[in-house]
Amino acid sequence: MNSPILDELIQSLRCLPGVGPKTAQRMALYLLERNRIGAARLSESIGMALQRVGHCEQCRTLSEETLCSLCSNPSRDGRLLCIVGSPADLMAIEQTGSYRGLYFVLTGHLSPIDGMGPREIGIDALLSLLDRHPVQEIILANNPTVEGEATAYYIAGLLKDRPVLLSRIAHGVPVGGELEYVDGGTLSHAFNGRQQLR
Amino acid sequence: MNSPILDELIQSLRCLPGVGPKTAQRMALYLLERNRIGAARLSESIGMALQRVGHCEQCRTLSEETLCSLCSNPSRDGRLLCIVGSPADLMAIEQTGSYRGLYFVLTGHLSPIDGMGPREIGIDALLSLLDRHPVQEIILANNPTVEGEATAYYIAGLLKDRPVLLSRIAHGVPVGGELEYVDGGTLSHAFNGRQQLR
Image (cartoon, rainbow over all chains, first blue to last red; front, side):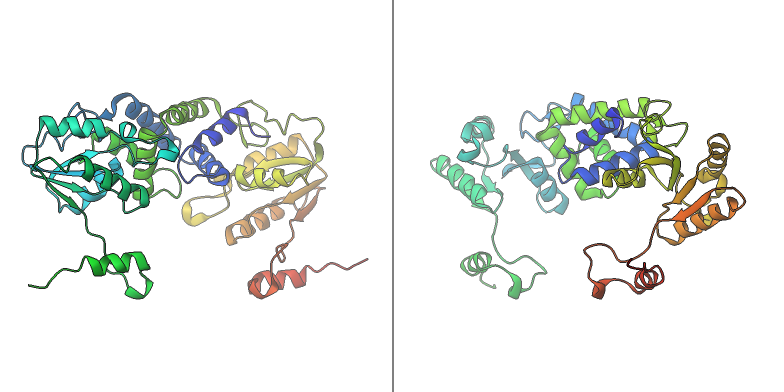
């Protein structure tokens, strides 16, 4: 019923995460009826990003330079290395402003069932980075999921003979949460990881 | 903190309806990390649609031809004309498959506060279409909102001296709904518009 080009636009909008057929149709009509300038800008910026944005050769986050702005920033503390599972996790940590060290971005987490082994997620690149730039502390900030925990455990095993302090971000009750609604696993972690006052 | 090109991509994704800063960031990272092929297709199809999709010169819905597939379809009933407020409304009606006449798509509804007067929503084009192609019945399928009702009322006033049957789509309780949860206005309409059984 629609024109083929409009159908193609609706179909291609569905590649966006969380966008189903209804939302894609709404987006396509909005772009064509109400915001052609925004649509042109979007088309151009996707093209530009695809062409120019690659990965930082040191930390492997998304970057348009060979070395990203974090790795090339001399005021970051090169003795700390934080390992995360994706650029989105890096951004979330950066947005807190509470960490001043460097990062290493894995390509997801270990998940043999999805074909994600150590090589696929970039463990080799991590080890070769550590050979070139030894650090004092490695903070494992993998997701608190089964895959993330497995990945953190695996990396800890690989690095156990190196003279480096290994740490894992704390598990516990989220700030602002109510104990009543916190799940059991998190509560157990919060008790096991309790910290002495003074 | 991000690369400027990535920031620009995130900003331009925010022009999509219902997409805020968090979702835009998630979409941008997804496109660049996981689905570059889909991203390229999206960029291309937006560009193509902007270039090729215009408005049907008869019914004014989105179309890449001068005359859309509905207006140029000889099996549609040219004696019926349904007036809707947007191409999305037209699509919703077409998807039911229960209407076989033609359409006329207004550019929204009358809303003086937003600068939408009769000329802006395309009443002139509607009258000139009716002069060229007189019809037997006009079905006002404007949205059941204040603006939609005002627009339907305004059009009914304009056409009252023409030899044409005017109708408005029925207001009433939605199929599958429970009376308990239906709002008062809709319930009153359902009572006023009640239909005799046999």
